[in-house]
Image (cartoon, rainbow, N blue to C red):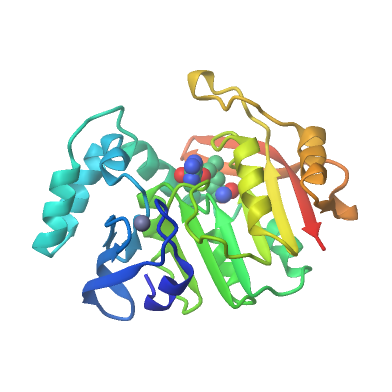
Length: 288
Ligand SMILES: C[S@@+](CC[C@H](N)C(=O)[O-])C[C@H]1O[C@@H](n2cnc3c(N)ncnc32)[C@H](O)[C@@H]1O
Ligand SMILES: [Zn+2]
């Protein structure tokens, strides 16, 4: 984590400004705590990755294997104790799944989807503040950092953010965080992205969250509308027309070039014998 990112972060529990305890730092903070003086919560930074979850025990309860790895990866005793104390309960473990998907995204960087999105983004004015929800390994953020002042990516997967953090840029930082949580308080962004996350983050909640983060700026959103996920499905899926309608209702105008639904190929290399071939819709919306 860059020390300079601290001024933009807020406590996801109480909204207060945060403070840093740095245990290990080189070009950026490798290990330490971000803490909230007001509500006394502590957020660990492990292997450069800040985990801004309001209940770290709950985060680890569905990632016990990751918890074991984090314990081994940390050097300071204070952090080791913190991880150990947080490993209390055990739910279905997502650690291996999140590791697997981080690998899939690394192997799928050359999908036409990413070059199409980059081309569309290059046609927008350059931004001061950019935020990507569900950024995974940061393919798009790393590109945007070449033309924007500050770029932030958030994702709930530690494995994905660990990969994203391998690319160092002064104006680019990543956080493990839950998209609807107020990680940046009331900060307004010139550009917010949410690519292919509507199946996992309840669309209404995501759209409302993003709408509050933009007073004047762009919202770039894409999705394959692959909502059939059994028990894990979101409650209120959207389709190409209801997504555009919801954005209009939130005060966004849809750009002429994305008024009609598109079918951009998004190919994910699951393994050497399996590829997942989506056709993704893209919407570029703007508040003036
Ligand atoms: C289908 S992937 C898309 C990744 C990337 N946006 C892309 O298009 O290549 C969805 C991503 O959203 C992340 N995610 C899911 N729920 C989230 C939440 N509540 N908060 C933050 N990230 C979340 C997942 O960890 C995953 O990396
Ligand atoms: Zn707080």
